[in-house]
Amino acid sequence: MHYPLDEIKRKLDIKRAKKIRESEVEKHISAVSQQMKQLHEDLSVLLPLIEKMDQQLKEDFEKTINLQGTALIKSLLNLTVNF
Image: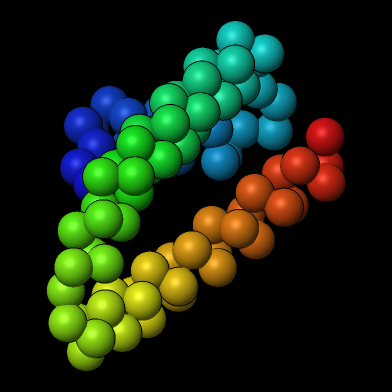
């Protein structure tokens, strides 16, 4: 995933800020929501392709996706619990 420099700067500013404007939070939530929709679509396309691969490749992909998936689930849990 590639981020433009202004997006990286904006994210760093958000992390450093003690107070943040509601509009910034709203913009950030919208961006994350859009990324989640895109991830869902990508996985829907990817799953049938992975199912056709041999078992060893499936296991390799599973390890990679499970690691990242676990981190994502933890982040989402933290987010939803804090609402």
